[in-house]
Image 1: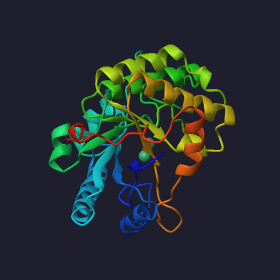
Image 2: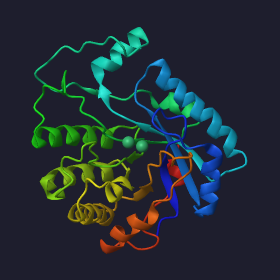
Image 3: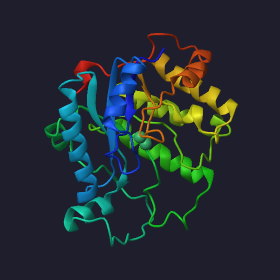
Image 4: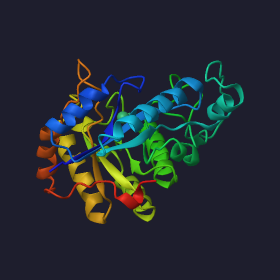
Length: 281
Ligand SMILES: [Zn+2]
Ligand SMILES: [Zn+2]
């Protein structure tokens, strides 16, 4: 059912170790037609941007003999005041946010021209942590407050011109809502879907939800059904292993388990999308 993987981290992501040679070997072994390498670009400071440059340079070199590899990035929302501070000082260190009554505006690390200049052809935009408050530790961390903030970030990403694919929708590091997906208001999913559809964006089926032991069986089925509903609305669904590299830096194939839940939700061969050539930059 899955023939391409659009979300892979190489050793140029701060939290990943996939070796490029191992990636190529794995892709041939697993018979994937197309893959996208999407290293993290979280901040607009030097260490993060140099990871992006290293990724672009090395993937660019590899593409010459492996044309099935596409260069992408994974962009993470940060607070606008933090973005501005880095733009001014060149570093994210030493930033002290000024508390305010309303959530901070959202920004992404790089502009689309800069990405295109580096040869990046698409971006996954994905929420990872809250950016609405000065101090997440002392803020209201109720499930409802977190859902509101994830909704806000995902709506931003679904609207932003830099984002091609909404990555791992409703991912949460602690899996706070991974017991029963129905805690996420249906109206929020309809809003996100409506905006994705209007803006011609993709949604990602990320293997995380089907592998993490934080998610219940019930949640996994509900989640696959959520993806199916968006698919039926006309939103193309891409697959992302979100591979960060196995113990020896290898590409770990995770498709079998994911396909089990997808097919239970009505997906069949041919339903998962490649990113179309005219949607790549
Ligand atoms: Zn991510
Ligand atoms: Zn990722």
